[in-house]
Length: 282
Image (cartoon, rainbow, N blue to C red; front, side):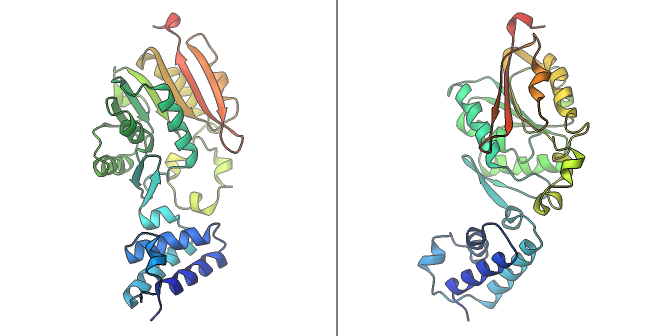
C-alpha cells in the first residue's frame, strides 16, 4: 500500500511525462481532491497509507488530464479573484487576465456605489459575481446566450451567497428598454483561424460558443458599440476584454470619451475602457 507522498511523486512524474506544464502543482491539486484534503496536508500526512479505492479515483483523474482535459474541469472548481467558482465544460475557465479586468473595474467604482452593473456574456459569472462581492450595494445583472452557462453562474451565486439577477439572451436583447451605469464583458473574440491553433485543453474541451466570434472576432464589438447606446445612462462606463487589434477605433467617435486601451502582462492589447460622453447623450 502506497503512502500519500509516494503517490504524489508518481502523479507528478506521470504528468511530467505527459508534458503538462506545471506537473508538481497539478499533482497536488489532483491528489488533494481525491484524498479530500488541502494541499498542505499532502505533506503533513505524507506517510499516511492510501486506499485502493483512492488510487482508482486518482487513475481516472490522471487519464482525463493525460487526454488534456483541463485540471479545473476535473476538480470542478477554480479560484478567481475573491471567489471560488464551480466550472464545467459549459463555461470558459476564468483566466488571470480577467482578474486584472475586475481590478480595473473596482478601481473605478466607489465602495458604496448602489448603481447598476451588467456582466454580459457572463459565463461562470466570474466578473459580475466578483464585482458584487467587492461592491455589495451594486445592482448586478448577469446575462448570457447559453442557458447552461447561466445555470453554472446561478450555482456560483448560491455557493458564494450573492444576490444578483440573471437574464438569458443574445447581447442586449434580454434587457429590453432597461439602462445601466456600468457594463463589463469578456466576449467571444477568437477568429476561426486562430481557434485552430489553440492548445488542446482549450480547443477540445472549452465551449466554442464562448470563444469564437464571427467576422474574425469583430462581430461582438461592432454590435456592442452600436446597440449599447440605448441602454446607457449619462456617463456610463464600459470595460471590455479585447481580441482583434485596433478595436479601440470602433469607439473613437463623439458618443464616447476617456477611451483607453491597455495591455496585459504579456504586453498584448487586452482591455478597453470608455465612458459615455454626456454632451452627446441621447
